[in-house]
Length: 140
Ligand SMILES: [Zn+2]
Image (cartoon, rainbow, N blue to C red; front, side):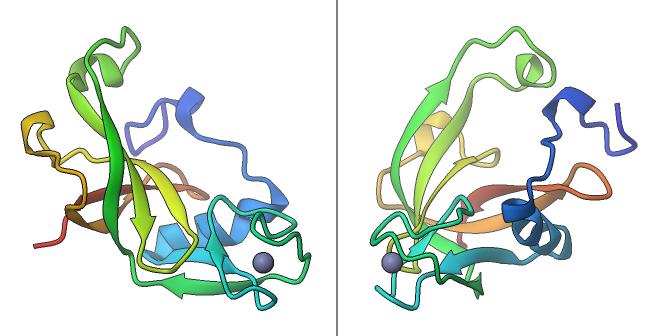
Protein backbone atom coordinates (compact mmCIF):
# COMPACT_ATOMS: atom_id res chain seq x y z
CA UNK A 1 0.00 0.00 0.00
CA UNK A 2 1.39 3.45 -0.95
CA UNK A 3 0.80 6.62 1.15
CA UNK A 4 -2.11 7.46 -1.14
CA UNK A 5 -3.95 4.39 0.09
CA UNK A 6 -3.81 2.80 -3.36
CA UNK A 7 -2.82 -0.88 -3.21
CA UNK A 8 0.52 -1.42 -4.96
CA UNK A 9 -1.03 -4.07 -7.24
CA UNK A 10 -3.13 -1.33 -8.90
CA UNK A 11 -0.22 0.97 -9.74
CA UNK A 12 0.91 0.35 -13.31
CA UNK A 13 4.53 0.00 -14.34
CA UNK A 14 5.09 3.08 -16.51
CA UNK A 15 6.23 2.24 -20.04
CA UNK A 16 8.41 4.76 -21.96
CA UNK A 17 5.43 5.52 -24.25
CA UNK A 18 3.16 6.31 -21.28
CA UNK A 19 5.62 8.36 -19.17
CA UNK A 20 4.41 11.71 -20.56
CA UNK A 21 0.76 10.78 -19.94
CA UNK A 22 1.37 9.86 -16.29
CA UNK A 23 3.65 12.88 -15.65
CA UNK A 24 0.86 15.11 -16.98
CA UNK A 25 -1.79 13.39 -14.86
CA UNK A 26 0.33 14.03 -11.75
CA UNK A 27 0.27 17.77 -12.65
CA UNK A 28 -3.48 17.68 -13.31
CA UNK A 29 -3.12 17.78 -17.10
CA UNK A 30 -4.54 15.34 -19.61
CA UNK A 31 -1.67 14.70 -22.01
CA UNK A 32 -2.63 12.79 -25.16
CA UNK A 33 -1.01 12.12 -28.50
CA UNK A 34 -1.97 13.83 -31.76
CA UNK A 35 -0.96 12.73 -35.23
CA UNK A 36 0.13 15.64 -37.47
CA UNK A 37 -0.34 13.40 -40.52
CA UNK A 38 -4.10 12.76 -40.16
CA UNK A 39 -4.91 15.34 -37.46
CA UNK A 40 -6.57 12.80 -35.13
CA UNK A 41 -5.82 12.14 -31.47
CA UNK A 42 -5.62 8.90 -29.51
CA UNK A 43 -5.28 7.45 -26.08
CA UNK A 44 -3.61 5.22 -24.74
CA UNK A 45 -0.11 6.34 -25.80
CA UNK A 46 1.35 4.37 -28.70
CA UNK A 47 4.36 4.32 -30.99
CA UNK A 48 2.22 4.75 -34.12
CA UNK A 49 -1.08 6.45 -34.93
CA UNK A 50 -3.97 3.92 -34.68
CA UNK A 51 -5.88 5.91 -37.33
CA UNK A 52 -3.29 6.10 -40.14
CA UNK A 53 -0.15 4.28 -38.96
CA UNK A 54 2.13 7.32 -38.96
CA UNK A 55 4.99 7.14 -36.49
CA UNK A 56 5.25 10.94 -36.31
CA UNK A 57 3.29 11.85 -33.17
CA UNK A 58 3.15 14.90 -30.92
CA UNK A 59 1.88 15.44 -27.38
CA UNK A 60 -0.85 17.95 -26.60
CA UNK A 61 -2.64 18.95 -23.43
CA UNK A 62 -6.29 18.00 -23.91
CA UNK A 63 -9.12 20.08 -22.50
CA UNK A 64 -10.11 17.22 -20.18
CA UNK A 65 -13.66 17.51 -21.49
CA UNK A 66 -15.62 14.82 -23.27
CA UNK A 67 -18.93 13.02 -23.73
CA UNK A 68 -20.01 9.63 -22.44
CA UNK A 69 -20.00 7.25 -25.42
CA UNK A 70 -21.03 4.15 -23.47
CA UNK A 71 -20.76 2.74 -19.97
CA UNK A 72 -21.14 -0.30 -17.78
CA UNK A 73 -22.04 -0.66 -14.11
CA UNK A 74 -19.72 -2.84 -12.06
CA UNK A 75 -21.93 -4.56 -9.47
CA UNK A 76 -19.64 -7.33 -8.20
CA UNK A 77 -15.93 -7.25 -7.38
CA UNK A 78 -14.29 -9.12 -4.52
CA UNK A 79 -10.97 -7.24 -4.57
CA UNK A 80 -10.28 -4.12 -2.47
CA UNK A 81 -10.71 -1.23 -3.00
CA UNK A 82 -13.36 -2.05 -5.63
CA UNK A 83 -15.18 -4.38 -3.23
CA UNK A 84 -16.13 -1.31 -1.12
CA UNK A 85 -17.05 0.82 -4.18
CA UNK A 86 -19.64 -1.35 -5.96
CA UNK A 87 -21.85 -0.52 -7.69
CA UNK A 88 -19.80 1.96 -9.75
CA UNK A 89 -19.73 3.23 -13.32
CA UNK A 90 -16.95 2.68 -15.85
CA UNK A 91 -17.32 4.73 -19.00
CA UNK A 92 -15.99 5.05 -22.51
CA UNK A 93 -15.42 8.78 -22.87
CA UNK A 94 -15.07 10.44 -26.27
CA UNK A 95 -12.71 13.32 -25.62
CA UNK A 96 -13.47 16.64 -27.33
CA UNK A 97 -10.22 16.13 -29.27
CA UNK A 98 -11.32 14.13 -32.36
CA UNK A 99 -10.27 10.48 -32.44
CA UNK A 100 -9.49 10.01 -28.74
CA UNK A 101 -11.54 7.70 -26.56
CA UNK A 102 -10.74 7.08 -22.91
CA UNK A 103 -11.80 4.30 -20.51
CA UNK A 104 -12.26 5.64 -17.00
CA UNK A 105 -14.04 5.16 -13.74
CA UNK A 106 -16.82 7.72 -13.09
CA UNK A 107 -16.74 7.64 -9.28
CA UNK A 108 -19.07 10.62 -8.76
CA UNK A 109 -21.73 9.42 -11.22
CA UNK A 110 -24.35 7.15 -9.62
CA UNK A 111 -25.35 4.23 -11.87
CA UNK A 112 -28.90 5.61 -12.23
CA UNK A 113 -27.53 9.02 -13.31
CA UNK A 114 -25.25 7.75 -16.12
CA UNK A 115 -26.61 8.87 -19.50
CA UNK A 116 -24.98 8.36 -22.87
CA UNK A 117 -23.92 11.75 -24.23
CA UNK A 118 -23.57 13.40 -20.81
CA UNK A 119 -20.75 15.94 -20.59
CA UNK A 120 -17.79 14.93 -18.46
CA UNK A 121 -14.62 16.47 -17.12
CA UNK A 122 -11.38 14.72 -16.11
CA UNK A 123 -10.20 14.66 -12.51
CA UNK A 124 -6.85 13.42 -11.27
CA UNK A 125 -6.15 11.06 -8.38
CA UNK A 126 -2.47 10.63 -7.41
CA UNK A 127 -1.59 6.99 -6.76
CA UNK A 128 2.21 7.14 -6.33
CA UNK A 129 5.18 9.44 -7.01
CA UNK A 130 4.98 8.47 -10.70
CA UNK A 131 1.32 7.78 -11.41
CA UNK A 132 -2.03 9.52 -11.10
CA UNK A 133 -5.28 7.93 -12.22
CA UNK A 134 -7.65 9.88 -14.43
CA UNK A 135 -11.33 9.67 -13.50
CA UNK A 136 -14.23 11.49 -15.12
CA UNK A 137 -17.18 13.21 -13.47
CA UNK A 138 -20.06 15.49 -14.52
CA UNK A 139 -18.91 18.78 -16.11
CA UNK A 140 -20.97 21.13 -13.99
ZN1 LIG B 1 -2.71 9.55 -38.02
